[in-house]
Image (cartoon, rainbow, N blue to C red; front, side, top):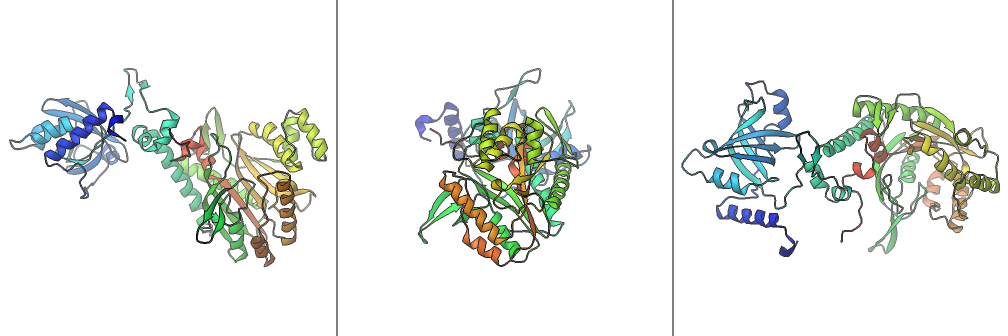
Length: 502
């Protein structure tokens, strides 16, 4: 920032920094500060006799100067606590500069400070720290957008503009404590899922983000170039094909929390960079995986929120087993009254038109079914619901259904009108898999930018033999939206992608 664009408040703070330097007070000291407690620990455990020697650090969030004494609020990583600063306590000698000049005039809201002292209860019954030592730890050169409340408790002048909150998440986390709680809950959710799988003997692994061929999903990739190899690479759209290679290699169960990247549209449900958890287990099928998914998500809900019932907007979502199950064709007939199960592509196009579902000429039979489902069924599925037995055209990596020709053994879990996960009995027949890839290539020639590419190395791996396997991918960001009652995917990502400023 140039000097000409600084606000008056920023100039005042820089002047305060200069005065601190002139007084010989280091505004950014390097030595560690010996913290021995937290605000929450004090507030929860103070009994009137303990906490005789405390050392705490954090941001100064309020300051009320009252002559020779002041009250302030200190915010650490756990919460806020009141501090009481008396001039003669922190300046026992004749020199009162530390209080009169440094604390009163040169310390601003947002500065990091350290305090030592003891805990007491004020006459109004508020647990506070009586400060005996005060130290500047880091000077804030920009003013915080302080949240204010009127006499009725109504909040105003808050940092609520979504674009600014997402661009400056560091400020959002400072002034909106509920945001920190959202991300703490997300972390708890992920850890619960990890524990659930590790306890069952599955191995957490890492697979490449840079891939010479993208695969494992129907999506547009981001492309990059490796200078040393002089070769095009892609940011992965999924890690499925690498995890299956590990099943070929002999592992019975592997999973990964993976950052995936898709060069597609952005919305409150889509971010170009997102997190997926993918799990592959040998000698299982999609029926087993449905039972496993119900059990795991129910467990995660309990660990994250202490209940299987979670308020999401206007809806109360209940993750308690069992969940409702429909086949893909059953769900479309249930919610539209139209049975498309025996229709060819031309008949489906006619049915879609009658249902007012927009299509384009690049869409094959599978895409048409997907569009009808997405328009007419998915928005109505609020409680967690399994949709099973997809047409083969929609699922080039899933195993053909054992008893229903033209379908595959696949399910998706839909909740709050959005897909949470996608799972298969995995296709392990290398000849069938090659034919599926070749069909995808034909769709690509018709203009389908999301059609899969043919991966010869993956086919070679399958030719060495992959045992019967079931796999699943769970959208961590979307599950976090539900578990935290968040309206947008940007609310559960620390740093969502944003259009460049200016």
